[in-house]
Image (cartoon, rainbow, N blue to C red):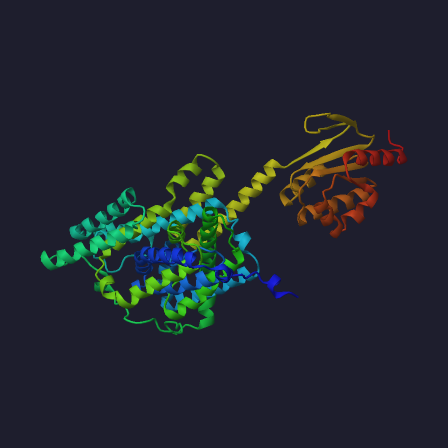
Length: 566
């Protein structure tokens, strides 16, 4: 057995290195430096918003970014912490602590690796679009709601986790607004929003952090304004490389019991990471004209999430904003992603003192703009004008994400999408019963009217013969005054499921007991294979399986004559 064919793991880094050149390195070096600068405020902000700290955000961006670039399936994907994970991470830390988060992340990494090894990369991309828009919009609202304390300097020491309780708490403390902090936060949002209008190269978030850090320092040193909290006031950045730490559980809980309770969370992290990274890779493919390897990408994401927790990191995935920044600045190969991690490493090792001066209201402003860009409100408005079923799935997923949790939102959204799909499939499918004459259409030309032999009725099934339609067929055959000969026309049956096969078997057996003959017409090859495996062909007899309606009616005429039917 060829292991290479069995396991679809072909990292782009190694294939790109075969024909690597000085010109490509120059492009990758410049792109990597710029993306690294772009990633600094995002990594810090995501780490803090997740309930860990700036160091954990930077460590995740460094290690995960490196591993995803080396082992991933895309040439230009940039990995690291993203806003999508914030609410999940925060919830896990609240309930299980940092040790529980590490275990959930490792479990998610293992799930991602298994998904890649099982070649599920292509299937993941078929997640219904309304669900993706719904939970992304819900995450955006949740991120926005977590930033009000820092944005307005409310000084709340323990903000409730529940969405409604959180806003009640904010309104109860509205009189504690620090106007210096609020002004700085609002100006940060304005600056980030306006930056693209005068510069496409300078990241708005980086410009806001540089400007507001300088302003906060000057206000403190020369105007005596000390109410603006900075990262250094709340967190302590390490001065060296992160050390290897084995995750430990708090409260003496057993590892197995914790793993069982964390399984749904780990699955959600894995699914979210898979969806976000593959969507990012697909968007990148469209821009650079390349094709990523979905299964390799999942394995690369899995490796990163297994390794990162041992160094204090948090869940990571492909980040579409940083990936697009990489492409727009000339990144050609995974080397650009590796360069970006070294830029972040230099920041962690040598610029910790400057990072500590960054004001918290400014970081909150960065995340407010992240949530705005994530919200996809234009897409939501557009979808509201189209499919009602898609809109309902979108809003149910969004509201469940906001008011409950992402795991429940995805589960309910998927169930709703499946049920609505089956409903549409049943509505589009049709079963009719014809006697005496049958109209045969040939794309509007040379239509025929065929005479149906005496004692014969034709059941025409249009659409997939799955359980919903199979039950409708069963009810119809019971209600009909049965003829001795029954032709089932299946030319428009694209597939048949287990329930359809079961109902066919019951129908044929009941007809045979009553002395009636069943003839199958126009069976597609893939449907015929299912009928053969289920023993349906043997049950009706090979002579009673015909390629088209003409042969089926001819066979019905022969049977009718043998029965002396008039």
